[in-house]
Image 1 (cartoon, helix red, strand yellow):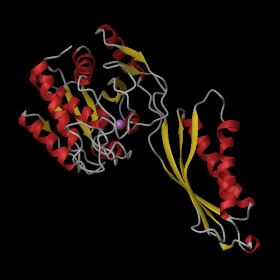
Image 2 (image 1 turned 135 degrees about the vertical axis):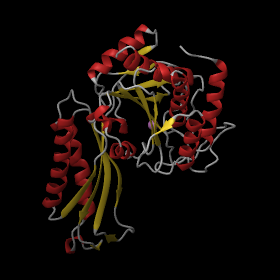
Image 3 (image 1 turned 180 degrees about the horizontal axis):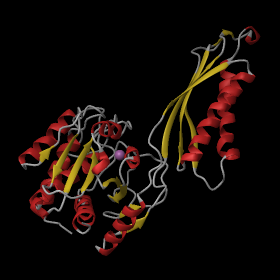
Length: 379
Ligand code: NI
């Protein structure tokens, strides 16, 4: 395990700098300039791309396999509540998901790989991906990169609930699909004293929220994990008027694409049929998110035995109903994704979220292990 203290001290400063200057999804201009500058100073080639923010770089000169390493670079619309000396100076924006750690780890790996560029039997491409938090960044990369000649793409996410340095992953069902919906029930507003003169969308909407609970309890096998959550409803604005419309939104999470299709279909059917039974109409709009995150079986086998051989602390991972836009890549290139423990307690997206800088040794070595196993040992 590479653990030169001077090197990791430098990376700690970089991580803290990025933490202090977080930028929202799609607006990572300063972060991108910082990454570009770091890479250019080390003569690392930056590839042409259509990305406004984020970038793709390349290390390695010889023909041979191409493997990719990915880190996401964006922050969240959260006001930081930590007491850190390097807390966010951009009010209302915070690296509360640890993408500052991801970015720094890939910069660190880039510097070390560049020092051994002559010995690389192929190419390593580095994706500094924007806009992960809004599930758009992977799509932007897919619009500008042809993954046909890549043999693997590997990423990770920090995990505050795993011990420092532990590497957690599963063969499949690692993270859930994330679909989002927004619905409107169209009623007919009227005086609250005379509901019979209009058509009340609030009663219909309430019935729909209740009826949707039957999807998971009555239509999905008990051994499948599915969540249907209504997270936001709104209708009307005063006490004595029945409004015209009832709005609702929420999310569907699952690990199986067939179940996913079935749930989306049932949800629409229940909304329309319930509205119809009240003589009303409805619209449902979907924002399709990433699918369930699974690992490529060959990469899973190769990398899990290599981590074990290298005496890394490999831990089994529970299924996670959170989502990850890394899942968009798996239809285009064999992918592998792990969670790496940072050993601090606040959950991801918490305003007091912390990352232990000591995790950098493990996350940088994770990328180096991957390159060694997939590019150097496997020609
Ligand atoms: Ni994240």
